[in-house]
Image (cartoon, rainbow, N blue to C red; front, side, top):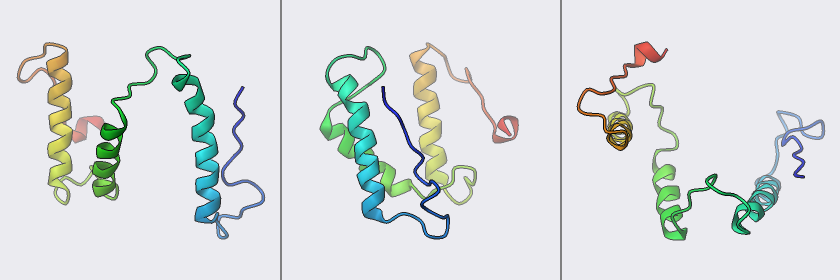
Length: 109
């Protein structure tokens, strides 16, 4: 059974923080503990892995837009465009035609 300790516990104040080295050591430990389950074939349907090349592309794309705030489409119009394309693809997967799903940020608030 995997036990997870808090990243920021009593040994780290919010002002002191954690060094980058400590942070990534902990994240790598957590990742390794989780990966062993699906990499050994013990998980069915919980992991959708398209291969290492796809993972590299996704990480690069995320890195480019990681500071964007989709709540402000007037500042980040291309984030909104990508969001709309994902919604369109999702509707298509469920045989939804044009106008099948209309979301407005005021409705979601």
